[in-house]
Length: 280
Image: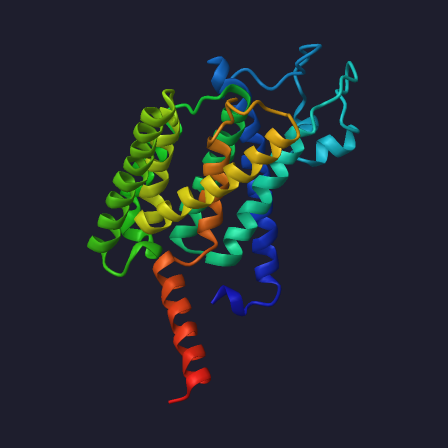
């Protein structure tokens, strides 16, 4: 096994971090260009102020930002800190997933999910939209590779059904919340992009975890929303993009056991505590 080779694990951690940085750099391109309906392939990256094309040695993820002091080489315009942060977050997200899953098919599937979630968060934060291409890619990838996704079940059939049900439950549950919210508050309570996003996520993480992700996202969104209202950063009826919260919660669930496992562990702890208190 590769784990028996001294130092090989460290090499893999470094490898996945570097791959993550590279995907993070590409995520920046997607976040900037997709909402503007620009090609993510051509032309090469350029300074947003002086329009000079960025040389390859000035476009090395994270390192170039440090070497350039956070400024354009030609016009010395400040480069947004968001760019290296996105690269760093993507790199760290990849090595955390490697720590939890090792060299398995779920690792590569979840790294792809992590990349999409980061891009979706950036676009939704700045433009309040979630491009359909990302939920679609997640749904297709989730269903196609479901039989290799060991986290969804034991048998191939169980894994595929879990992915399919996850797609329906993830999208359906948010759609239901949106319908109820619109009826109660007389305005749109859930964007269509959020519904499609959780349908795609559900196809990858399964129906149990997608429900957990929605619960965590709602909790995080409520806390942050209350904080922003108290400090008068947004109005009480203002709009707060929900996509970043759904994305963060979806990633968090990748690091947690399935809710049924958590409940079984809780009940086992509870029974053990009762046994200690009252005796056998």
